Length: 255
Image (cartoon, one colour):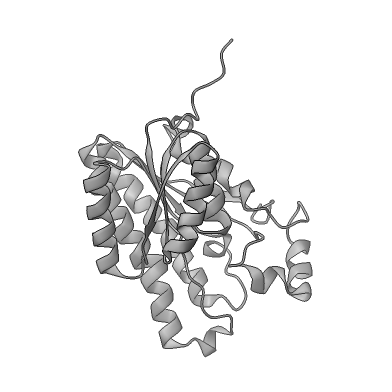
C-alpha cells in the first residue's frame, strides 16, 4: 500500500506573506518540504532571504521577495515579477498583518486605525485579486487567509485589529463564492494564541497569559509549526472540496 499523495505540492508555486518569522516562516518551511517552490515575502528582504536560504539548505526551493502589502504599488510590482519569473501562482498565503496599537477602543489612534485597515483588509484583498487573476489564467489555485480567533471573539484592547480580522473572514467567503467557477478555492485559518513576536504583548505578560490560558481547553500556547499543518491541508488536494471555510486552530478556545 502506497502513501497518500494528497499533500504533495510538487511543481506548485506558493507565495507566503509575512514569512520572515513566526507563523509565516513555519508555513513557508512546510510548503517547501512538501515540494512547493515558495516565494518567501515580507517587508524586509534580509529576513526573507534568511528563511529562503534555510529552505534551500534543507533541499527545498525558495525565492525571497520583499513586499509591504500595505503599499498598493508594491503589490503591483510583486505580481508583475511573479508573472515574469514564474508565469503562474498556485497558492497564496496572506499572512502578513499588523496590530500597532494595544489600548481601549476609545483611545484608538487614527494613524494606527488606517495602517491596520491598509494592511489587514486592503492588503489581503488586493493580494487576493492579483493572485486570483493569475490563478484564473492557469486553471485554479488556493488562497489561504490567516485571520484570527479575534475575528469571531474580539481580543481585549485589540479593537481595530479584531474588526479587520472579522472582515478577513467575510472576505474569504466572498472570494470563495465568486472565484469557484475559475477553480480557485479560498479558505481562512483562525489561529489561537501562538508564541510569536507578533503576539509577544500577550504571551510575555503573565497576567494576560494566565487569563487567556483559562479560556483555552488545551491549556497552552500554540507553537507556530502547529498552524502550518492546517495551511498545508488548505493548500493541497486534500481539501479539494473545501472552500469558504474558517478553520479554527485555537486549542479549543472558540468551542
